[in-house]
Image (cartoon, rainbow, N blue to C red; front, side, top):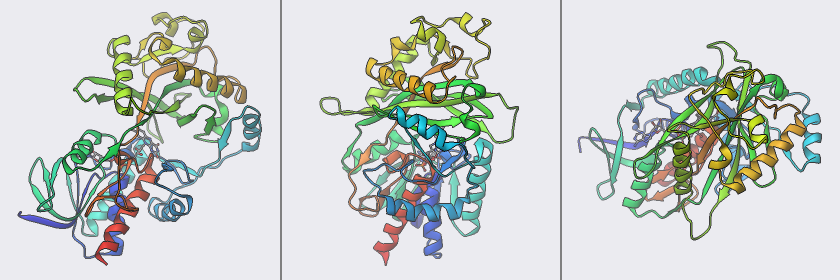
Length: 428
Ligand SMILES: Cc1cc2nc3c(=O)[nH]c(=O)nc-3n(C[C@H](O)[C@H](O)[C@H](O)COP(=O)(O)OP(=O)(O)OC[C@H]3O[C@@H](n4cnc5c(N)ncnc54)[C@H](O)[C@@H]3O)c2cc1C
């Protein structure tokens, strides 16, 4: 092999960056290569970039304990230098929530917006390069040859001392293939399924007091990823294992660019955990994603709350009539009937939570509120790790959202720190 590095990191998202900064700071002479299949780098930092600095947000409890997470979060904060958003009137919301058996988590959060996240990602990568790391964008890892410790990419073969694989949610399929090839056992039995709501800010004014309020409802339902100001709903394309495409909706907001829409969007997600005979959360999610595509003619579904309450499907007129007084930001969605597409148990749990939320913050279930479906959050295929630094084979570390060690930017970065510390301790 022409090239060899002490450590190669696949993926320049926060998990890859966390590993890279830790290695560079603690062992400055180490040769380091980061590679990413994308041309712009740094994965999920570029999506709205709300960063949560309070355990357990983003930390899967099967691989994190509070003291360890808090130790890592201190280092994450030192790199990401968050401007923590102020909150007010929290006691009022907490009191109302408590009466309904709902919990409002008070968390330390910052928000850069999609534009701010892109700028931060570029800055971080440039900083690593200045310190001597090699970075290769638009290069895709395709496999690993373990016997001579080589990473295979679409361009070359690269020798490595240690390998950190952090390919994020986009890299699920790659990671799965890799684990199959290397004989790493894994499980995939959890998935989050839900809706994204979009309404006028006036109907969900809590966002002026708490940018991304985290409510935990009974039946494992929670609010997730609230966007306001310059907020809009997007659709993301995913491919099932047999190559068929489906959409999951999501939300973004810009920090400065564009005009304030006066709208807010957030997800209500229910976590579903499977036991035998169904083992795969991804397979279940794919089936639901494809079913929604079938019903929406190849697009996500949208329905006004007013129609949903009356048990009626939404039609094109539901989005132009007098009562329905704002344009949905993901207007390419198909007006329809979400209750035909969503499994009953999930819908019941989410609808109950929506009613509770409307009691805590009266107005959110205004008839004009739009429900988009599906919003799907896949959990990683959780590998069986050899140790606490996410080593899955000798010298090979699997971290970040793709490997199920995180569910958010800060926890992904923290996972990278743990992998790097494992690498350094093996070489001590
Ligand atoms: C739309 C959206 C909005 C989000 N908003 C937030 C938010 O506001 N706050 C928050 O905390 N979290 C948010 N998240 C989640 C957050 O993005 C992830 O938790 C985080 O980015 C995970 O980090 P990671 O390093 O594991 O993966 P990623 O950030 O996804 O990075 C993985 C990188 O690996 C690259 N890659 C994949 N496969 C290969 C391969 N075979 N070869 C080379 N490179 C490869 C990808 O191109 C990518 O750049 C959001 C996610 C999405 C999709």
